[in-house]
Image (cartoon, rainbow, N blue to C red; front, side):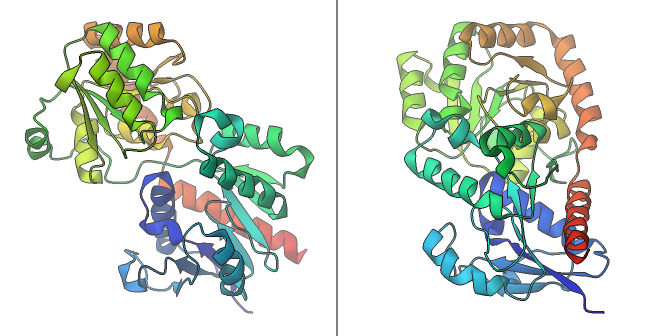
Amino acid sequence: MRHRLVAIDARGYFTGGGIGRYTRNLVRELAAMATGGLGLRLLISNRHRAADLDLPSTDVEVVVSRAEWMNAAEEAERLEDEAAGADVFHSLTGHWLPRRTMSIATLLDLTPIVHPRLVDGEARAMAARIVEALPRASHVLAISRATAADAGQVLGDRLPPMSVVHLAAAPQFHTDVPSGNVLTRFNLLARGFVLAVSALNAHKNLERLVRGYAAAGIEPPLVIVGAHREAAESIRAAIARLGLGTRVRLIGRVTDEDLAALYATCRMFVYPSLYEGFGLPVIEAMACGAAVMASNRSSVPEVAGEAALLLDVTRTAALVGALKRLEREPDLRSDLRRRALARAPAFSWTRTAAETLDVYRRVLQARAA
């Protein structure tokens, strides 16, 4: 009997942010596990070679795609042929789905649809393409129950069958990480800084965090890690306007190894996002034993459970109060660290891959029935 083949759009493998983390960790876990007669074909970026992949198995077909990443015209022209011959195609972004091959789409988030004013026109256009394509999928994987609920609201009876498959912290995020060189390089003290990790986008709510930090008047510096995007200038302007000087530091992107060390040694980790599809930094910080305070909106409570101090991040006064409370209550910080380490193992990439593989099998079985 012919092995059935799953083609996976893994062109995001080499990118940064949540898409890159999702693609790399899911693909590596799938390659490492017994797939029970399912073959895997990975479509990767044409800026890379198969040898660039860091996979635990070589028993995977790799195709260098001719389609540029997120280029809708090239995807329509190239990916259809590159998916041909597969029994099912898995889009890890939902951005493009074939018309001639049965497909599964991962829905990462609907920020541009739910909160269009918080993102730029390009993000809204991309989200519109995802929403337009989703009804063609045989199955949708939502990365949180919150995202699944949003999809139901947006698509209604046009939404295909859907499963929730959570993400996780990668293995490099844990408590036993070397941190001395990292702290020296960034001129920080262990347990002596407040950490925020986020792309500098409007819906990440970092400008409000800066205002709340200034009003709280706490001593530890605020360190913000993340790619500098459209909201960066307004954040810098707020830092200057509030006279914060070097008390707030925008240090840009860092390696995962450095990030793990920062999570593990921060005094507290703050995640004030207005909307998230999942919120990977929350589970990463928890896996490293950080004391987490975070938004009580969208998917964040689903990820954090009772292991974080959750608050209404639309209110600057709530941020001020939470920052002051965590600063003056070391026992609370210790309790949150303990809860975080107990909560984090509930999420794992092995589980994510196993649940994804189960969806592949169910979709293929339904087709054969």
